Amino acid sequence: MKKWFTVFAIILLGILVYALSFFDTFSGSQKDKVDKTNAPGRIHLNFWRNGGNVAENKAFEELVSSFEKEHPNISVNMKSIPYSDYEIRLRTELAAGNPPDILTIDSPTLALYANTGSLLSIDPYMREEGKIDDIPNSTLKGLTYKGKIYLAPIVESSIALYYNKHLLQDAGIPLPSEDPNKPLTWDEVLEIAKKVNNPAKGVIGIDPAQGFNDGESPAYFKTPLLWQFGANILSPDGTTASGYLDSKEALDALQFYQDLYHKNGVAAFELPPAVFESGKLAMTVLGSWTLADLEKNHPEFKLGEDFGVTPLPKEKYQFVPNGGWALGITSKSKHPKEAWEFIKYVTGYEGMKKYVKITGDVPARYSVAKDFPELNEYPKNIFLQQTQKFSKNRPVTPAYPVVSDAIRRLFEDVGIGGKDVKTAAKEAVEKINTGLKEIK
Image (cartoon, rainbow, N blue to C red; front, side, top):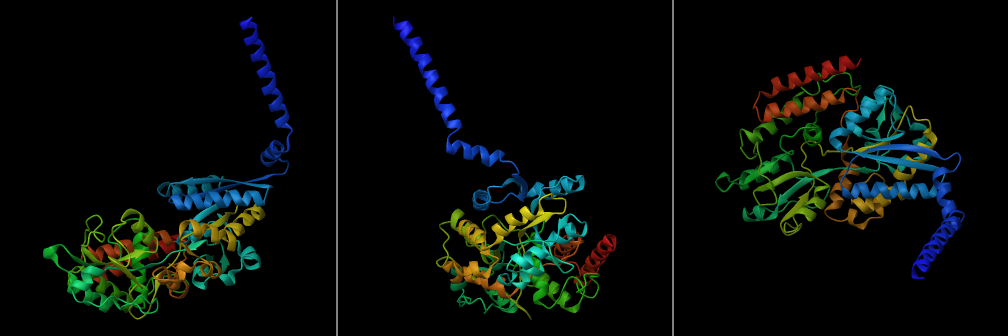
């Protein structure tokens, strides 16, 4: 009897489960779910982006989700690719004719993609719907090639001079200004570095431009020194480096940089780990993103108590670098209008505001910056105002990879190698000019 009761109970449970699943199939919630994924005419966009940190990844995931809710006829398949692999994989797919619809590009390499016809110009979209008056001209200039806008920005970047308060105070040095409009001059920085530099105690005066790294970092951190002394890398029309990277102003900048290491001995070729946080580096040039990194990874090293931030030093001029990852549309996309709708959403006021709220980055729009009180207070106001008032883009040229590598080698030659600055500059000019000719 118990056996038959058990069998009956199992059969009854099966019928109940089937009935519930049948009902759910035709219920409103399930119907919406089916419609969302298989609705006739639904457009699918592929979006590739370089893998970011946890906050950046979260921000993009939320933006994709909210965009799809507001645009039920469009789905976005986002693929995050590690930074080290991104450029290679992207160029491979572009060459194979199978690129994504939407992609992120590090703005200095814009011209490389635009020149090969891989990117669609979004100039009409940006001018009609992108509200470009809300974006600094210096930012737009770095996203423009041959007079047309190809990328839309979401956030900007900037760098400043971080200093160890204890080392400066112990040397009797007044702390630098917190005013974004009152940077130290490089000569003033040199004098401070001389006073605090103490090899016997392992204290280094300054790391002027993030040491000697690979990739794009050297060009990003070191090019501003050339601008500050009044030099440029290329001619205004981008056809030559002759007379620009080897100009008197450029040689003066390079000589000053070399002297920090060789003549004055206030900078070190190799830096130990966490040298700034451990109190062994008096001054260093770091990015806006470093504030969050220090707070997370070195909570014992506190802003205001242990270190401070002051604007990036100047010489004849006050300049900082700008540029970052921006969004564009590939020329082979079958859905450029829908791709633009996504980009407009992500880089518009609401999308950018959501992104900045999660990441804490510097927004590329004036209107968004006004909505974040912390961006208008020390120390973030330094990065914001530098970006809006004193930023400059690296050269927009199809030969930019050659330019970037030449700048890296140039500063290594005069820094680590101690090579004659005129000779080193001449070699860099020749390398860049060769790259420009090959592009032509």
